[in-house]
Structure formats: structure tokens, C-alpha cells
Amino acid sequence: MDIIKALLSFLCRIALMIAGLFVLYLWLHATAGILLAVFVLAVCFIWFMHGFLGLTGGLRDKRKAASQMGLALGAGLACSLLSLVNYSFYSFLQGTTINAQIKKEYYQEALISNYESLQRRMRYLSMTRHMDEKNVEIYYPDKDSIYAKEVMNQRQAVDNAARKVLPFHHVPKVRVILYHNPLIMKQNLPPNHYESLSGMYVPKEMTIHLLVPSESGEHTESIKKLFAHEYAHHLIISYLTEKGKDNRDVPRWFEEGLAEYISYKSIGRAQIFSPFELVPFEQLSSVNGWEKATRINSPYRPYEQSYFAIDQLLHDYGRPAVTKLLTKEDLEPFSRVFEKQTGNTLAFFQARFLKDENDIYRLNIKKEFLNR
Image 1 (cartoon, rainbow, N blue to C red):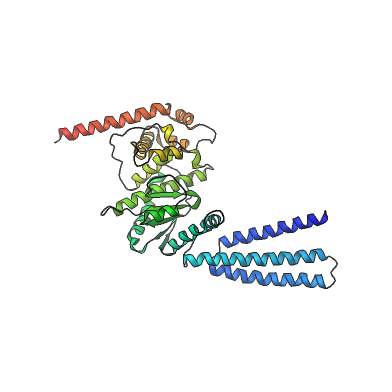
Image 2: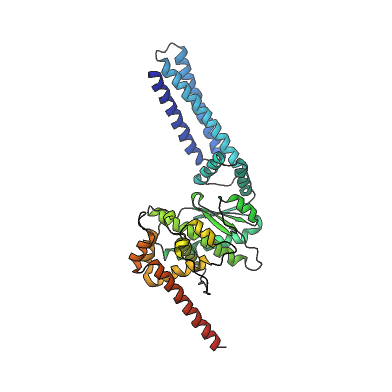
């Protein structure tokens, strides 16, 4: 029984040492990792020899000496392996800086997913240039430096537009990756069922993937709008995290509409309304429902519908109602909170806001006709 307890205690200490070294290596660059390995190996050698001499020199507590040797050997091997993995990781990136969170996600992917996919993503980053300012770091092909600068310049405008809606404080750093090839971008995205994507924010990696628009003459404006929408998602999720909430509890249309609203505000434009076929908001609440509504052959325009819904909510009920809807209690149904904040059911609201927008549209068309 004593032997089993001693063995379990030994294994727990080994596991704790490996976990501690792993966390430490998440923050270390290639050279720093090698230097740490040299230092740890030297300490482990001295520690091992101390235990060995105690074991062979007639020390009474031989179990303690053997445990010391085992811990020294385990720590040395773990540190050597982590150092090699860390060095190999940065050899792909050719000196590029990656934060600890992203590095952890890469390690997890290497363990549970295809290693070739991991190498492909790292090699793509190694072939890009890098720009880092305040809350955004961006990786971009050499020919896209002008778009990288536009993205950097747009960040402050999105922050300002978002603060008029969401009273957030701290914004964690986000990584942005630009692509020209949609197939390469798709390979670097998590599994999804979207048929066509120009951009995606991946919360667990705090990474925005953007496809540089192919239309000539529209690149700059399009990339600014595209970045603004995805960066708005980052700000919304950061705000929810501040409040101890999760965006999975927020209806998809509400988050997408808010991101679309903030992005348009950041570029100083308003969405131009044109009549569309409404899809009930209940059908746009889940990721699957949203994916279905955004298919290429879909008759719906959920981004526009959600934008105008948020615009109407802010106009009629103000920022407090929107923030309360966003940060509702996890177990409370969104429809009930909506009715509490607006005095109307969600079904009534979606019919009324669309009627109002159509009335304004017809009035503007009539004015244009009379002014001809």
C-alpha cells in the first residue's frame, strides 16, 4: 500500500512539473526556450547526481533518493522535449511573434488534428509579413501592405463606433491574417458549413481571417468594411467576457446585426435599405439557422435584416436596452427579455420594423420620382 501511495505521489509531482514547464514554454521564444533547457538540464544533472550519491553512499532513505533521481530525470527529459518542440515551432515562423494563447491552440490542434494541417498554417504565416500595433497584429502577403495599413488605421474607428453602443473597457489583442486564395483561407479556418466566406473571426484563437476582395477599384473600402465587421465581433465577445457571459447564449442575428451596425458606423456610412424577404428571427438564432439563411441560393438577406433590426432597437429603446439584451441571464429566454425591455414581442417587432423600413423606402422612391 505504501509503495502505491509513493508511486502515485511521484507521478503527481512529475505531472505538475511537466504542466509547469509547458505553461512556461508557452511564453518563451525559441532562443529563450533553449537557454531555459540548458539551465534546467544543469540543475537536473546536479539534482540527479545528489540522489545517486545518496543512493550509493549508504543513505538510509533510499526511496527518497530514487524519487529524487526520477524527478530530475523526468524534468530534464520534459524540458528537452518542450524546448525542441518550441524551437521547431518558431523555425516555421521565422522569427514571427505568436502569443501564448495562439501557441496553445496550435499545440492542441497538433495533438487532436492533422499535423500536416498545422504545418500548412504555420508555413503560410512564415511566408507573410508582420505588423504589430497596440491591440492588433496583422500577417499579410508582401503585396498587400497597403491593405494591412488600412486595417490598422480602421481599428480606432471601429473602437469608437463600438463604444457608442457597448461600454467596454479592456480590449485583448487580436491577430488578423490576410489571404488572396479562398482555398488557403478555408484550410486555415475551423470546420464550418458556410458556402462562401470573405471573413471570419475565431474567438478561441482571437484571430480574424480576411479574404482580400478581388473586385478592382473596391479593395480599400471593402477590406475596411470586412475588417470592421469581424473586429466588431471581437469587441462584442470581449465585452461579453468582461461581463462573465458567452456569445453562444446570444441569438446569432443579434450579434451579427450588432457587428454589421458597428462596422457601418465605423466607415461613416449607413446601410441602404431595399425590400427583402423577411426570415423569422427565431430561425436566425442558431449558427445552423444562420448558415442556412446565408447560402448562395437563399432568398433571404439576413445581414441586412439584422442590421436594420439593431438600428431600429437603438433608435426606439436606446443603448441600455441593447446591452441588457446582449448580457441577459443565461437561463432567461431571449424572447422574454426582449419583451421586458421593449414592451413588445419579438414577432410584433419584426413585423413593425420591416413595415417602417418599407414605408420609408417607398417615401424616398416617391420623392426621387417627383424630383426628376
